[in-house]
Image 1: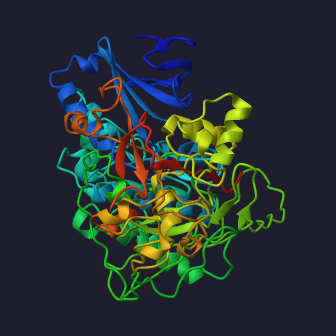
Image 2: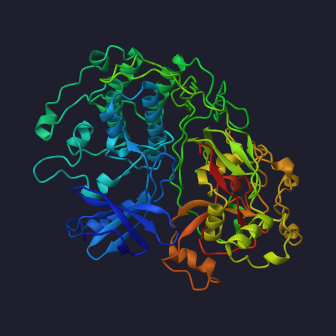
Image 3: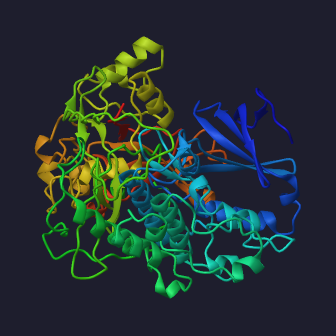
Length: 603
């Protein structure tokens, strides 16, 4: 099926064709409901005709749908169109590292920044049991803000089933695949680390360690590559050793986890660290301690967590998302006596680890601009915002590390007054019972589409799940926004069923003593909050919880996370409010659900 500009496929309108490959033709499309521009990958029809392809594809896509990380391009959905499959994914603007490498050498500090961001994403995915399988510069997109997004996560396995081509060639580039992948052996996370090691070699030395092998026979006789320092004597010896360890043919001799790889780079950067931190970044701490001040937390692989059964009880509800990262991501080495210690990094610009080779064209020297400090708050008609500096966060029940770019978040949830102004200006209908509410109360009874339209009007957006949680609990993985001890005087949630009977919605600016580390109010309690994070649920399990919906719940319904709990529900476990969520139909309206907005810091 060939598509042209203006063609419609389901809820998607074709804007333009972006390119074509052996497995798919890629189009830029617009979702007619959300109006968001996305990417449609139309798989070749012969794939669908292969025996067992659909049975293999669907489980893989369901797994990919669970990935929610700022450095991973988001998978949205898939469509079956006649005899073809179409995969809808996030549109990421920018240039791939393949393009940047063709333009010349990537500055060492930038290159290490990109690799560290990729390792953060791999750490997250590997813990969920997901391997990329096709990691290479062409699948690493750098956004205009300097963030890295990994593309086509897991797609190589989905489309090929891990098989070799009919001519004995391996599907994918042999320049980057691991030896075990080339031989058709079973793979684990260390295969991705090998591929990333090849990318790091190319960034450091300016050339690939291997070139243009196309058959398995050639791969079997491949020799070890020359050391990067032999290619470019300016490559630091410590970086040279890191790259060579990543490229060990025997997986047991490589880095065993992304965290270990990241720790090695952190040690290298820490040794070169000499400049103050960039604007919008949080200062590193001397020691990476738990929220109770205990010894450094040990890295643990979180168990795969399926979405909780949909429920209207928001008490057990407390990051993809437009996942954004800033140009200046923080990196500081936090080393403990064991390799299992978590590592945070800070990339300090302009950090010069090695002398950069001169490019063919003379470059005019100029003084790099000094980044301006980001203001700690913004005063806007649609609602004041507070800065959440870039850096690490400890998220989830297991407090796994995630690196988050700086952003702003509303100090309070959106109020009736602000929402009323939006409706008056745009003609958008007011929610039920809004006319009787005072301007200082949170707006409720809104769908996620209502929230998205307000955010667009306000020149903002909804926060991702990662952003919401960092804004709520800071950098230390605290249990509640104010600390680790539960205090019902700091939050509007009922203590028990008796208290629920008299519970009322409080003004959006109430409970200031329960503010988050960044000054955001009522991140927990008062009203649950929509976030820009889709979630997959079992429809049959969901239907009994939403019998009141009209029309009834169907397979067309999309579910989003609602975070933070509300005044209407008694929490069975208050400590889960900050990391758990309630999967909620996008069209549902609840008296205890509102929203707050976010905004990119570097805009």
